[in-house]
Image (cartoon, rainbow, N blue to C red; front, side, top):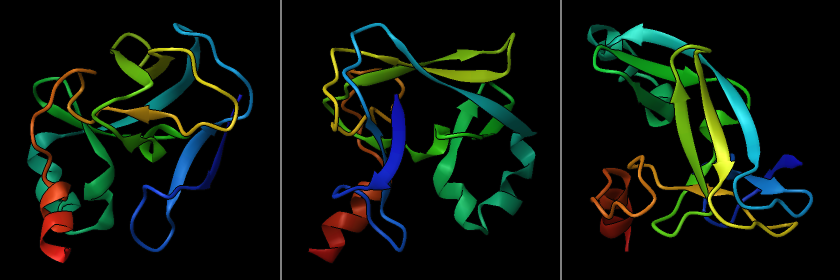
Length: 130
């Protein structure tokens, strides 16, 4: 249903994104990403590594690194996928927010809500490089 390929949206050395290998109807569970959680106070150590670019807020007191494809979904303010956090299963569950066509890159809004237009930190890097 999904695969990792080179993304025209991604920056950096690896330029990866997650793409649909078949049509995915709205509401379909795309991926369950297992969580490796750590306490927010440990973030000072993670911030010194590239992993800081790939973590998610996981409740009030924790941050999470997602396994599987979880940390490879790219951002869009017009996402075609959303995610729900399952604290019971310790997963981030990614769903099609609308119908997704085969070959289309699967995109989420990093703000957590599909219609949230809050500015994101990495966009500052893009603005200064232009």
